[in-house]
Image (tube, rainbow over all chains, first blue to last red; front, side, top):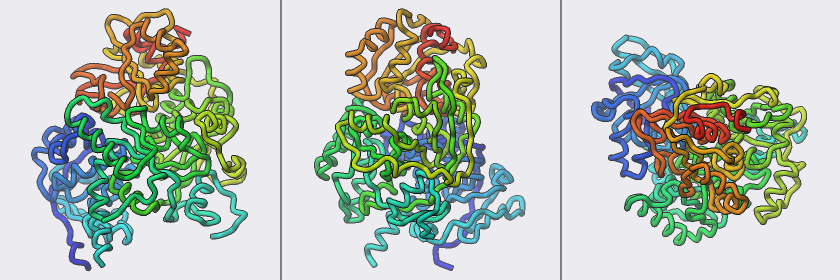
Length: 167
Length: 425
């Protein structure tokens, strides 16, 4: 077990299908610095998220999470706000790559809809396990392939490549 | 698997060439060399400059980079002006000669300037990069960190996708366009065709000009697909020639094999398709125009890579000729490129639009990306020729965007409510 494979534990924020990139990173704020833009994450459907989300919290959602634009800020806003992972029934492909490249685990789980708001969640991305401590349930998710977990563990593609440069 | 005789789809053939292997199988991870890279002012230099220096890396081949300033143009405040200035400086410092500064929307510039060649493998820092597939090109959208890697190495790994073939037989009726086809497909195929390539074929597609074909591939992004492709033909070659380039290959090499395997195949009758309208807040919420008849609109918007090319302006002009925009609404038109504006001025299209009361906006991504002129207020309703109607996409989180063809947007501008455009044709 590598040193960064510890599970994360956090409260769940729960949303539905087709959470798009404009909800995560609204266009009118795209020219702002990341910390400003992140304040508007989820604003169109939930104004409490960016204010109340805590470091380590988890976002759970339905199908096609991150659909829409290629804007990496959609995933980066979640990282900026301290979200430790996103669990969804499926992800839009560009968002999925962006998330892993930024060190944000994106877990594909067909049982994502069993999670309700505020559930205490921990995840083991390598093993493909999600534990719902509040409901005393365990869900299977698709394990992130080892070659991609190396990037996630490093904290994203940039630190991964920098480490590689050093060695 | 190196069986030379394995039947392949067009997408598989392009990926095989880019990966320098004889054939590929869906699901395998493979590294491809990119033939060209597209970047724009929003996801480009401002997002990769620092990262490239952190990696101590340089652009792998400046001649293979196409850079377009289209999102924050023209600058509306000091922040957007800084982004454009940074983009210009980066282009200069990195020797990027294919730099189009405020000349048009990136996907349209790629076509106008001849950067799309059949059989080529491209990546773009924009989700509508699949637009390039209209030229028999395989082109996918990526994010900025991924782009940093591509700029440094000239390569990217991809998971080989399966293809879905979509045939459109027959002819589209008057007043119905490729935009209607794509809204219809968003409803019928859904918006979660993850890791799939949509290959368009059939008589209706073969009869389309390149600008109309680009709409098909452009909106495969809304289908949630990896990309879209259309096999090249004489129309493709003519567009490349018009762009001042010559295709050095043979288009016969870039056709799907007759017995290639598809994940699914769908056939539709183009002649039966009615104008389509997508209701808020997803392109999936599409139905025939009659379903939304009489929905009042505050703004009619013709813009973006999807909906403001020369063919789109022609559609709008056909409807608006001799008509007036209703006093209860406003019609904004943001042509997709400077050359589009120029041609529309020369052929009388702009005169028809402005005589009807249209307001002409600067070229660029504009209100479609929620960045430029044409934003909408709390409670306002817009019918737009663009591709996305996500909540808050064009302004206030409490505004509503309907999507339709340029014909439908023009018709609604005249009546002030969503209207079947065929009434004006």
